[in-house]
Every structure is written in structure tokens, then in C-alpha cells.
Image (cartoon, rainbow, N blue to C red; front, top):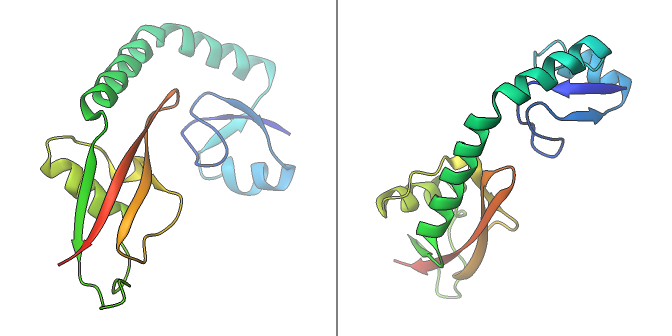
Length: 147
């Protein structure tokens, strides 16, 4: 079944994308929650017209995301946490801590835009991806240190 997404859904697509999903997922979850609508001809035309009208605004959002990625550059964020003598940390470093560290450095990035491939459980350096725009992804280094 083809649906048109009304909002960004991680792992599925971005707003106004036409994606194929299993009928049960579409009819029982996405459409009732208001996250999607059926991709019939009239809805496709309506979505294409909305995308065309919002193209200028989307170009500005993309440019702002590229500017933010340029300003961040090769930034390394340092997160201090309690750790044992072996280097294993108590708990885990979360995307909220990374977003707060970025905010402290002057970069306002939503915590939902920070993606960790692996959850840091040891002291060391890890890679995080910032999903600033659907076409702009930026990698930063997260250095986990013991306090």
C-alpha cells in the first residue's frame, strides 16, 4: 500500500514522501495517528502542489542546515561521566547529554536530531551523526571522559 507521510518518521521517510508499507501498518497505525494519508491521485496532486509552494522555504531550511554543519565543522564534544577504574562508565551517554553539550558550545541542535550508532558504555571516542535536514547529515566526535 502506498501512503504519503505527513511528518518525518525515523526509518520510514520524511514529510511528503510517498512510501510503500504493509497494509496493516498503514491502516491500523500510521493513518489513524495522523502520520500519513492514503496516496490516491487527489492526495498526490495536493501534496505535489504543497511541496511546490513550500520549495522556497525548504531551500532556506536546507541552506540553514548546511550553514550550521559548516559552523560545527570538525567539532569534538567532551562528555564527563563517572567511570570505574577499568574505563567502564556507570550508565550510558545519551543523545540528550550530547545535545546539551552542543548547546553549551552555542549550537542549538534538537536531541531528536542526534543519532548514535552505538551507545557509549566505555571511556573513549565515539561518532555521532547530526540529522540536520533530510539532505544534510553531519558527523561529530563525542569524547567520553571520566570525571
